[in-house]
Each structure stands twice: as structure tokens, then as C-alpha cells.
Image (cartoon, rainbow, N blue to C red):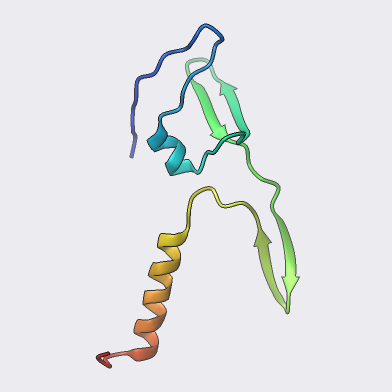
Length: 91
């Protein structure tokens, strides 16, 4: 899905990224971004974090900063696990 907003460049060459986009991508104060210029586009993207992998009791775990809040994902995951465990039991 593409979202478009209009914004202006100020006299110092800065632009404001609309709040909805900042929130959707987890951009906060001092978040580093990469700016890429192609022949007909300017692309701004969050700078990738430097993830690393650790072995936690035989399971490989990727350690990284999330790009977006994951509370909704956790809630959905929790609900799915409860349904799997309880099956058709009515609580």
C-alpha cells in the first residue's frame, strides 16, 4: 500500500516526515536514516541496525532493534497459542 503526503523543504533543506509514516516505521528522535538518490527518486529508509545472532540454549536468536512495535503481533501470537492449547474448551 502506498501512502502519500505533501510536505515542504525548509530553508535549511530539511523535510518533515509525517507522523503516521514515522510511527509506522518506528522512526524516533535521532533515528539514523539512509538517503538514496536515483535518476528520478529520492529514497529515505531507516538505517539497518547491526543485528547479531546468539546461540541461546541451542536455539539461534537474532538480536536487533524492531522496525515497528510488535505488541499487536505478541497479542495475536498469545491468542493463537491459547486456542491451540484449549481447543474447544469454553472458558
